[in-house]
Image 1 (spheres, rainbow, N blue to C red):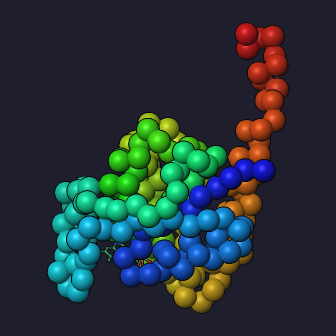
Image 2 (image 1 turned 180 degrees about the horizontal axis):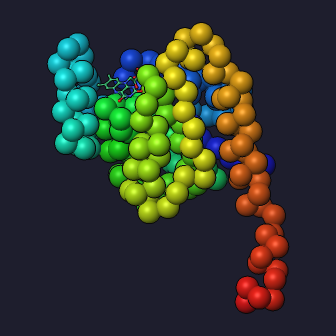
Length: 175
Ligand SMILES: Cc1cc2nc3c(=O)[nH]c(=O)nc-3n(C[C@H](O)[C@H](O)[C@H](O)COP(=O)(O)O)c2cc1C
C-alpha cells in the first residue's frame, strides 16, 4: 500500500482545513510549512502581493517527516495573484531533489490553479502525478468533501499503478 504525506502551507486557514479533511478521509499524515517572518495584518497581505509579483521565495520552516520517506506527497497551497503562494514555491525549490511523486491541490477564490501546477512542474522538471483545486466557497459550505475524497482515491490509484509491471516494460519492442 502506498505511503502518502500531505504538506500544507496556509495563510488564512482554508488550505489547512482542506489538508486536514484530506488527511482524515485517507488516514494520511500532515506536515506544515510556516514562514520565518509571519504575515500579519494589511502589511502581510501587501507582502503576499509583492512576493507574487517578484516570484520571491521567502524563508520558511518545514515541520514534518522527511518527504523522502514517502512514495508521494500532496502539496496543498493557496493561490496568490493567479500563482502558487510564495512559501510553497520556496518549499518546492528547496526540496527539489528530495520530493517523491507530487500531487498538487490548490485552494483559491476561483482562478489560477493551472499556473500553480505548471510552476511546480517547471521547478521539479517533471509533471505532478495529479493536480486539482477547490474554491474557498466549496470549503466553507462543505461541498468540496466528495471531490477531495475522489482526489485522494486518484492519488492512491496512481501510486498503486506504479507497483504493477507495466505492459510496455515487457514488450520486446521496448528493449
Ligand atoms: C494576496 C492574495 C492574493 C490572492 N489571489 C488570488 C487569485 O489570484 N485567485 C484566486 O482564485 N484566489 C486568490 N486569493 C484567494 C486565496 O487563494 C483564497 O482565499 C485561499 O482560500 C486562501 O487560502 P488560505 O486560507 O489557506 O491562505 C488571494 C488571496 C490573497 C491573500
